[in-house]
Length: 77
Image (cartoon, rainbow, N blue to C red; front, side):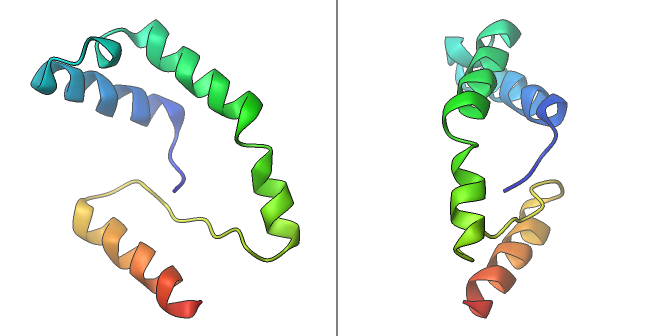
């Protein structure tokens, strides 16, 4: 799923307010998690893309819209 980091930060900060999760209440910690992801996990995208195994889904929108997008990708496999 693809989403802009700033959108994700806002979502996680909101989740932190609702859930009480301390790791989702500190923007610096959240951005550090994204940096870790970008350095260590995101490079796998190219590896799987060359094999035709990577599929991107827009993660912005309401749950129903995102679910439809994901289902479309899954159904195409």
